[in-house]
Amino acid sequence: MYSLQVETRSRNPDQHLYWTLVQVTVMDVNDNAPVFTDPQPIRLRLSIDDIEQLTANMIIGKIGVEDADSDDNGRLELRIMPPHNKLVSFFWEN
Image (cartoon, rainbow, N blue to C red; front, side, top):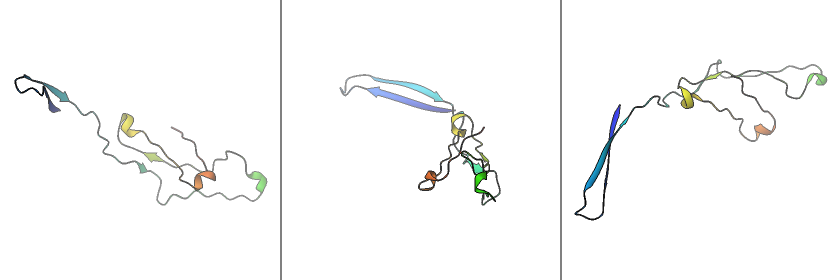
């Protein structure tokens, strides 16, 4: 727990000083970086003998990612960066 003293006073020198003490409890610190749970480097491979096997929204693999932080600090966002985002997309599965 941390204590924070907040003070306020008028610009007038003869005015009173007002203050209050605020106690802050940190429930979770964003101190854990997300990690890929798959062996590195991650390679997703697909072997197709017939072009007709290719379909829209075809799943070619899964990538595991975890973050040990809790609540909002543990939420993850994955993105495919340009220019590759025009070729490949992914969906999020909990």
